[in-house]
Length: 206
View (cartoon, rainbow, N blue to C red):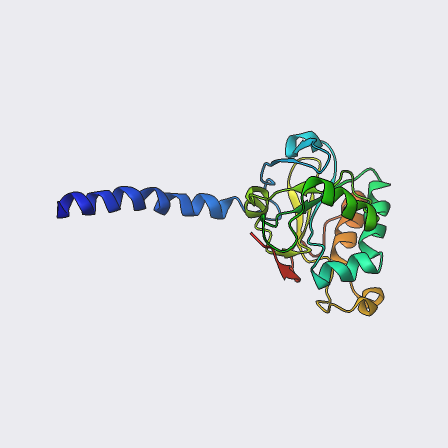
């Protein structure tokens, strides 16, 4: 019985040993292909990475209760970025990966209300990733956590929205906005000077 027990443990652990590198490779990295996803938004429409082939795409992680999200939405900074770059034909998806029962989780009707109250200018209402599959695939750690993807499906920027991790919105005018810089450079056919940074904010509530 002891031998059979050890064999059973090995059989259970072996797949985990080989699964770990696969999960690590799935995290979105500048210069690499963006992880595929398929998520339903608050209106019930499914969005996948393939839907945005040939287009610039920004992906943003959101939690309405996070002070850092409030910094960028309360000031209108995030909505202004969304409006500016969707106006330049980029697409913008905002994702909620909070699990049911945790801070930031929203049912579809609630998400639509929050989209309205926050003046969301994204290309779709919130994508609802309650099981965390999309968030984990991208390695989303914080809210906000930002990713810019080019028309070939490669990540060109991953990290913070800007270089000031204060929750005080007063710092925004003097902050260097990495997402805007990455989009301006990319849309102008230039290389992105800062392709990755340490994302700051609240932890994603998986």
